[in-house]
Image 1 (cartoon, each protein chain N blue to C red):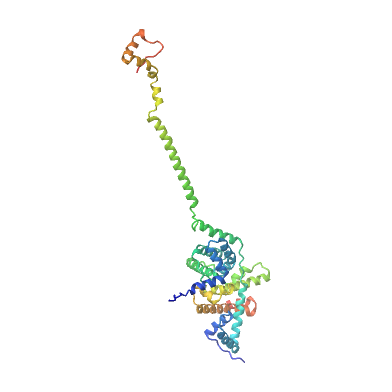
Image 2 (cartoon, each protein chain N blue to C red; image 1 turned 120 degrees about the vertical axis):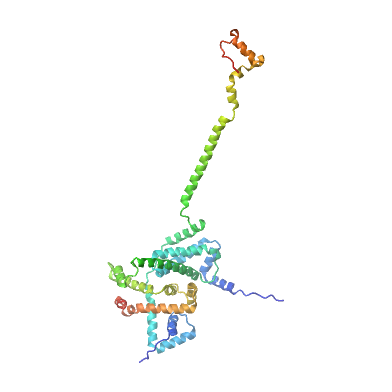
Length: 170
Length: 221
C-alpha cells in the first residue's frame, strides 16, 4: 500500500504552478517525483485540475455591438467637450442667449431714445424757418424799409393797413 | 578615441514588445491620432473586459460602466502611452485599479447598509439556488445551479485572488503578466494563485466527486 505523505507548503504551491506550466524543468522533475511517490499529491493535482475546469461553467457575458458605438461616442465626445460634458451647459447657453437679447434690446432702446431726445434738444434748421415763416415771407419788405419800428407805425395807421394780411410782428 | 555607446535596454525591450503585441501596435497608432485603431481595440477587448469585471464585482451593469471608464481612461492617456508591457496587461491593470476603487466605495456603503440592518447580498446558497431554479426545465436547472455554485465559490475568494484567477483562467495570462497587472512580485502571484485554487477546490470538490449539487449543499451545511 502506498505510503501517504503530506506535501510541504512549497510543494503545494508548486502543484498549482505545475498545472499552470510555470515551473522550470528542474522543478517539474521534482514535482513529478513527488507525484510518483504520493497518492495524496496525485489526488490533489486531480482535484485542482477538475475544480479549475468547473470555472468554464461560469456564464459567458454577451455584450452587444452597441457597447462599442456608445463607448466610442463617449470617448470622442469627452475629447471634444474637454473631457467632461457639463450638465449645466444647456442652461448656460440659454442664459447667454437671454443676456445677448437683453443687451441688444438695451442698445436699440438707447438709440431710439437718443434720436428722439436729439430731435427735441438740437435746433433744426427747417423748424426755425417754419417758426419764422411770417418774417421770412415779408423779408424783402423789411429789408427795403430797413427799420421795423417804422413799419410798425405805418401798420398802426389805418390807411396803410393791409386788410388781407395780419400784422407782421417781428 | 572610441565613443562609449550607451546601452538602451528599455527601448529595445519596448520595441520588441511592440513588434510582438499587435494590440500595442494599435495603441501606438491611437497615440498618433488614429481613432479607428482605438475602435478596433474596443471591439477586441470589450467582451473580455466586461466578462472579467462582471465576475470580479458581481454586477453586470456596473461592469459595463467600469469597462467604459477603463476605455475612457486609456483614450485620455493615449498621448503618454509607452509600450512597457503587453497591451492587455496595461488594460487590465487600469481595470483592476478602477474596480478596487469601486469596491472601496461599495464597502463604505455596505457599512451603512449593515447599520440599517439590511444586507441582501449575503443570501445563503440554498436561497440563491431556489430563487434561480424556479420554473425552469430540469436540465436548465442543473446548469443554472452549477453556474450558481461556481459563482458562489468564486465570490468566496478575496479580491486579489479572484482577479488573479480570472486573468489566469480567462485571459490565459502568465504569472509574470498577472504580477504586472496586480503590481505584485511573481512569487507573490504564485502563492496567491495556489491559495485561490486551494479555496476553490475546498468549495467545489464535493460537487466534483458526487457530480450532483447534493455534495455542495452538504458541504455548505
